[in-house]
Length: 340
Image (cartoon, rainbow, N blue to C red; front, side, top):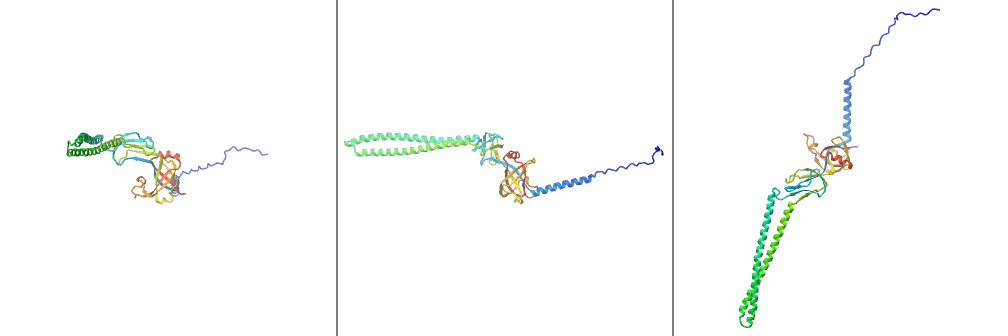
C-alpha cells in the first residue's frame, strides 16, 4: 500500500479579493423635487377642498351695546358707576343738568332772577289787595253811617220835620256806596286770583329748576359698563357719548358673504367659526338681511372697487360657547358654511 504524504510546499493557487462596490450618493435634487411636488399637491388639494367644500365669509364678534348720548347739550354731575361694573336695568348711572349747563352760576342767577320776578309781582298784587281792602273798609263805614242817618231821617219825615227830598238824596248816596262796595269786592276777587296764579307759577318754576338739577340717567338694559368718555363736572355735547353699556349675554357675529354664495347662506344654516387663535366654534344663522351692504374696510381688498355683500347675523349654537365668543369681542373671525 502506497503511503500518503502531505505536500508541505506553498500552494500555487491564489485567491483574488472582490473589488468593493461604490455606494451610490443620494441625489438631493431629486429628493427636493419630490418634496416640492408633494407640497404643491398638498396645497392644491387643500385649496380645492376649501374652494369646493366650503363657502367662506368674514365677520366681527359684537354684542348688544347702548351708547349713552343726548339730543341736547348737558353737563355730567355725579357718576355712580365705573367701567367694568355690572348694572341692572333702571339702575341710576349718573346725574346731569341740561339747562345753562355751561355755568352753574348762570343757572343759579336765572333761578334767583325768575323767583325774584315772581315775588315782585306777588308783592304788587298783595299791596293792591291791601289798598282795596282799606278802601272797602272805609266804604263800609260810610255805608253804616248813611244807613243810620237814613233811619233817623225816615222818622223825621214821618213827623213832618224833614222833607222827602233830603231822605231821597241820602238813599241815592247809600245806593252809590253799595255799588262801589260791590265793585271793589269784584276787584279784590280778581286780585286774589292773580295772586294765587303767581304763587302757583313760582312754585312750578322752583320745582322745574329743582327737577333739572336732580335729573339722572338710568340704565336701559342689564349689562356691563364699557368705556366711559366723560367725567364728573364735564360737559357733553350733542355729538358726544357719555359712556357705553354692553350686554354680554346677547353676543353675535355680523358676517359678510359674497353675493354668489346666496344659495348656501340660509337662515338656520350651521356655520363653523374660526377665531384668530385658530380655535373653532359652531354658530347658527339667525337672520339674513334683505338688503346688501358694503363690507367694512378691513374686509375689503385694497385698491379694488368696494363690493356689496350679504349681511347675516350669527348666534352661538351652544350656550357654553358664549364665554369663548365674548373673549374675541370686536375681533375679526373667519366663517365657513359647508356645501355638502
